[in-house]
Image (tube, rainbow, N blue to C red; front, side, top):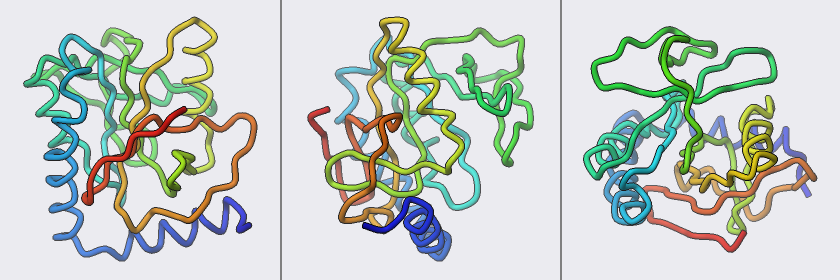
Length: 190
């Protein structure tokens, strides 16, 4: 089996090579597929998205639709070399520049515990396994929520070009409940 690092490098290079029009159309398709897939869970739920960086699939069209369906939105903020928190995203609220070229709500924004987390990723497979960027931020945050008795529903957002036949899994890796790509939705038994 190929190493996580090699899979990450290959699939990120493939994603980076996608034309901008493909990335824009992909974000819109993910919103069209994602809204009906998540609507039953969205009303009154706290949904954390992310501010896209580099060539990541842009979750903002889906996030806007989910907010219209009654969700309360949050964004992650990196607060240390090992930790992220999720902060309330208010439509008219200011955002601060974060690490890695992202933006997040200021420290004064309320911390939230997401019911649904939209996750960026580098690679995924047909069993719901994922490879992130190697920092482990989401894995640690989700493990902490689970230790507190809270189990957020995990939704990966990616392009089909990021799909691998299989992904190596380690004990700390957190699997997805669902993946949404421009080709459709796949739900997993986790």
